[in-house]
Length: 221
Image (spheres, rainbow, N blue to C red):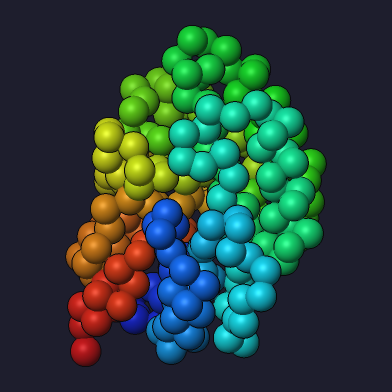
């Protein structure tokens, strides 16, 4: 996919700032940079949503159940509801991967469905499966649960788990499982143009990155 342009990749980026010490000034700088770079959105913590001045055309995304996923379905749904009320266009939720590993796939589906109820179309729900901590069979099961629950995207990683972030293998498997019916977001450890392109070629339709400027600076002239 050598014909990828800087602008096209920028429009696949959720320009992300989820550091625990991020200040309102940091978020304002992130939003301004998103406008300059032409990214699709900014992704920030839920308590930072109000009062953000977004450049024209830039969407507002946030997270819920983040980063551990060890919240009840009701708590995640309430968090998503408040995020949407506070202006979020998109919500990236973290599943409880222990439910998946215990074989309780219905519970995974049900918690995703509970959150999706609070993120109705045209709002977008992305489901973070923490792919680095899962076997291939578990990745497939997580993607199937997300689709059954009505999610819009599956997403590789929080970027906070010890297992690491996105891999080409995981993105390929996720993309093959959802078959274009859902989007695929690659996130975690993508820091340069080559890595970004590799994820897109593997099937990613969105990228969650904090190093957006460095990535886009690496685009071919």
